[in-house]
Image (cartoon, protein in one colour):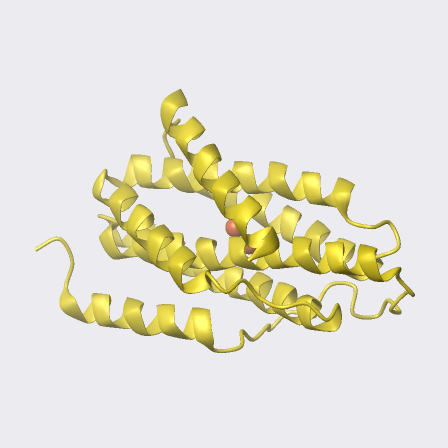
Length: 209
Ligand SMILES: [Fe+2]
Ligand SMILES: [Fe+2]
């Protein structure tokens, strides 16, 4: 059997909690000590939408890691993936809280994004650890680029969102490095392009829905 039923049940339970229960952060929320600045309503809404996109991105990260851990071959890769998923819950908590502060809401399609990403993650795991970790490294590299874009796009006065995104960017870069250290392979160009297209569909949609 490709994976045991107990692990599958644990993953399913974790998925439900990721999508429906509030996330908890152990680390301090970046920018917590900064004071809230007065923002023009339209700019505030734009910031809330961008943070919704980032929150959905973290939902997808959770799902990918859980899916990948489910089908990872070695226990070493499995524990690296589960550890990474744990760290991503902090990002989930930070973005969730910031959306609330900005008066926004989370994406209504999060259960769909979770299910789709979980399936993609599980499929990547079936290709073996080298490609599984390669997929993780490429995901994180693309997330870093995406967050750089958001740092350019977020209103300059929204220092609190910027602090969160900046900290996340550093974490994601570290996740990519750790995947490479664990033996990640370089994904072929078409696979990287497909990933870019998939994430563009997700980011464009969750900005609105
Ligand atoms: Fe993250
Ligand atoms: Fe990450």
